[in-house]
Image (cartoon, rainbow, N blue to C red; front, side, top):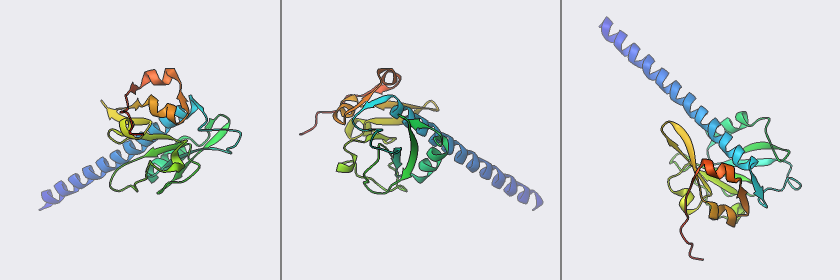
Length: 179
């Protein structure tokens, strides 16, 4: 009986340390994603963000864990001289300069078809979103976060991403749209 209790205790402690390790890696991953999104904004030009009419650069997301990590990671950062803020949203909302969409069951879905996002850089970590409705897709491969870019969609939203940044990602063709 005493050995049984020891084994249960060891397994419980191991499971606890594994879940804490997973939470830390998730926070770390979110911080890295926030850094990617910040750099996409930093190395982009176009009509989608005008520092003369905005008091801040706003990153929106439907993932509250990402928003918390972004707030910490980007606390003292600026885009075109304006402070960066991260905001949780659960519906289409005007004023988002970058939108990071997470499509998992526990997160609120956000419609990308909304007119609120016409001039918004849309970033996701969802399979195939760069090919169908987003601009940039973050994905994990070999333990590292990488990105793919749909330049035609960026151009349609009047966003020009630096060619140096584009060379770091995988460029994907977008299918011809019905309109």
